[in-house]
Image (cartoon, rainbow, N blue to C red; front, side, top):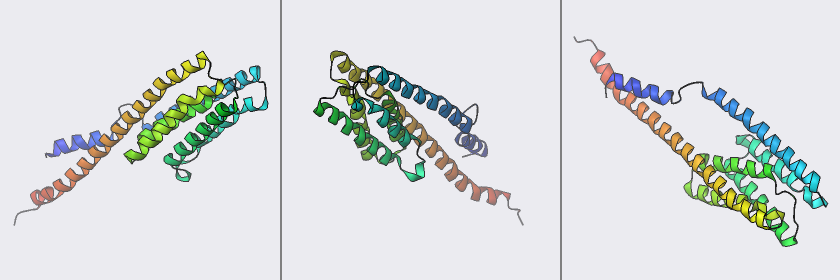
Length: 211
């Protein structure tokens, strides 16, 4: 491997994105995500407030902030696996309880759905073990698709799980795509470092003066 090709490969590995730095992009993502989640919570509040018939109807206003807390908690305190597992367990428990008890909520929880989609994408991207990814993605996907059943199982309610299937599929696809990009970048960086280690002895030999 020549010095020029090694330099080009190193530049590609250390600067994979063209344009602004990664940190401003992440900040822009957060600035767009958090207001959108706040709007969804206000929409939940408006729907439930206008159609509220009993104390149980306010349940999505509790599960939604709980899912948001799992999205926002710092990574060292709680791994992605635990976040996804806890969120899927709570969501499935609430859905089963409402169906078995015959409760018909006015709203299933838009904020909760959005937060679970965010966690689903993070799971597909960041969890290292493929078996754990498959299990968590299946559990979260089923929980998201079944959430509209909390509203009573009418004809329009059964349409929403069908639509959420596409949302789940798109989220899984996006997470796996980002996972592929991350793996490709890691392989490129590893190849650059290996090439640099192999190139160094040759450089030392050629640059040493002859006696």
